[in-house]
Image (cartoon, rainbow, N blue to C red; front, side, top):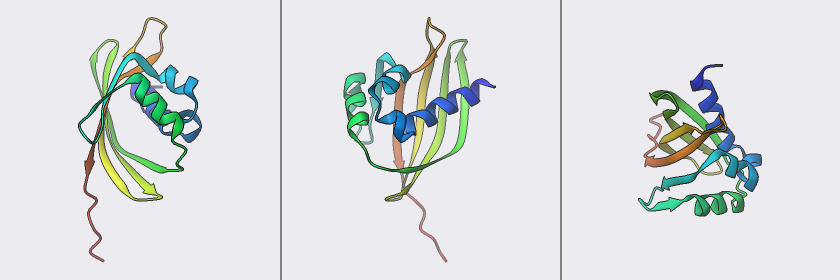
Length: 124
């Protein structure tokens, strides 16, 4: 399995409702010094993000497109992709995440940012 497949799998795991609502699973995926810049531009710390994820029980349908991974150093990679939410309400965003392989050999997310993009209206 390639590194890109491993990291994309971890991104997908963070989107999985079963993992998202499990504090233990989310804690295992996020580095201790994790930070996120939300759509509002506000900076969030690890504890705030974990609390928000495990409290949110919305059943969303996601689609990842154009996933790409760039290795920045032997144990540091940048993932970028487009994320579409198709249900219950359509939205789209461009995402970027920094992933680091830690001393225990596990890849954990260090940083994440999502930027909303407009969904093109159909001209049918």
